Length: 354
Ligand SMILES: [Zn+2]
Image 1 (cartoon, protein in one colour):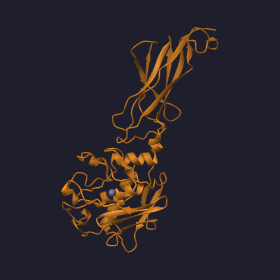
Image 2 (cartoon, helix red, strand yellow):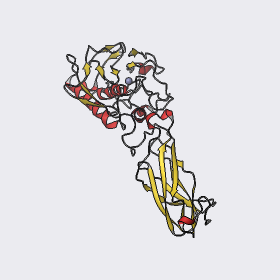
Image 3 (cartoon, helix red, strand yellow):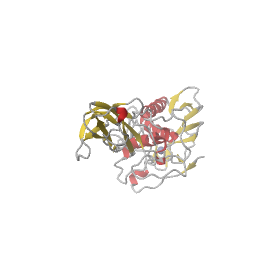
Image 4 (spheres, protein in one colour):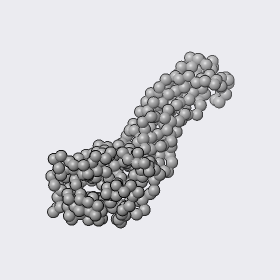
């Protein structure tokens, strides 16, 4: 399903000339400003699905544009930070990328795409010097010294590859101060405007790729364009020890399993800093015991404690400064000590002996 939506007007008159129109889903979700890119309703490709591409017969790009397109594929693969589909050039690739006057883009499109999940995609780029009603297309790659006002074919192709992945245009602040948070933009920029030559997905592109395709590993960092809640649990085993005995505190950190978190809900969160704190029962202040160690399963953290008196523990995951998950503090876990033998203690009755 494809339809065309033309974006012909914009309050900033100078940017009308920059309008790049692409094939869009008519029912794409609406995102709040500065959130993850909206996603196309036709859904994601398979996780890590490799989408091979070839040059469209009879409409091959120029050598310089081919280089830019292949660079964009490398950019997409390198910056997806998720299990998003990958793009690989092959002379026998399944999906054609064309260039030139045969482009089936809308009247104002510099480039355009179609997608047919899970089967494949197409991309077209207009030819150098194509005449639009706003002016004449200049690809920066067509010059030895790229002039101002040219479009970077690598950046424009990366926008198209983002659409193929399932991304719709990012919703920027009115000020556009967050423009560089996304390559998948309604208005592509020309040299030398900020963002004209972005060669990696922006964090709000990545946020939606992560939501749609999941993380590459449990230690991978969540895009700072996300704002996900986590839940931290803590348990002690055993829950009571002889005086001088040891117990193992185990924390488990996960992303909260909200439906709106799509593939990210419930993910174990490994490789982060989780701190264990301790206090005497009922005391008002906590003392840091140390940083917990990686447990045997992803997202768990362990710390062994020797106790000479009853103690309370909690685990703390502080909100990281550089990624899009929020901190959490576990419930409090009490561990009692007893002079009794372990088998003689009363379950749930503190240090009482049987
Ligand atoms: Zn676009």
